[in-house]
Image 1 (cartoon, one colour):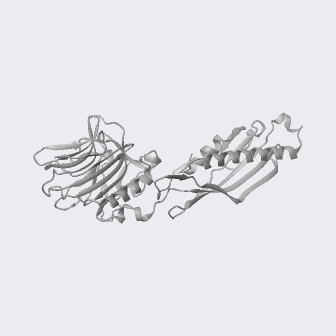
Image 2: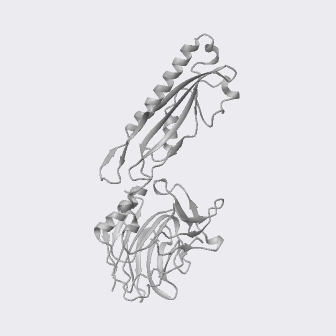
Image 3: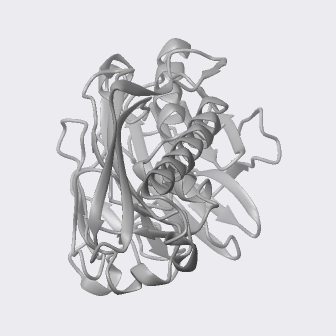
Length: 78
Length: 311
């Protein structure tokens, strides 16, 4: 089993998602990130992306706050 | 308003000039109109020096030219000295208005959680007023005001807060830097990764390349625009996230529409593997969706903004 965290900041909407327990194998180990659609080039996204940051582990709270502070300082999201 | 860009200063400076006409142009722009436009302020494009340290001060060097405080018919009836003095009064009054506007603003210091007063002030030693005669066939009186304005800038961040100071960073994409794009068409072929792991995202097919904008994103920052029909860009090296796929991801984005299904970011091996971790929207819901190998999935939406989980 595995865990993941995604921090989503979209205008004034934001939420923290944690403990994604759906992944039970390494099948995503080599998966690449695709922006704008899924990797099969369907389900296209209509919008803009300013920054993407990904870590290969769960971050501690202090580390998360560091990244959020960096992003908020730059983009004034909240 | 707080100044965050050079253009902010231009906006306020022009709004506070309520005495006559205004031009934003280079020196010499006042020519054939000098007999009909009174009073006139000419603002030359300011220059600025951006500091390279956290909480530094950006210095704006600005120069304004003020022409004639009297209409043409009244000029001959007023002494030259009086015309100069009145013009200087106008200029100083305008400058006060601009400074009052800035000192009333607030910003949030990157190092503090509570707002702090905007720190904007003029370097008093830089302020100079020059009275010029015999301008434009001796028909105008001109006062040139120049000064340096220092302001707190939020352009730079303490490097200790940079994402690459946190271990296990695998992807760091910034729309404001490292984007290879065609200036004329905005088409983006490479979005370089700043994590140090070389996980650039690329799109070689012109019709599929997203567009790079240097403004109008969150806080007027740059963004990469996806059209919802053909644009996508993909990493050249997989995440290699580890056998348990522990991930923490951050995304700054905006939706233009949210109808149908759209994935802002997808980590998957479709169609060979049904497992996926996808961030996007589905039928008006902004969501994060995780799909398992048996096709089951779960998602959370910002409609429950504090937290959520899948099973």
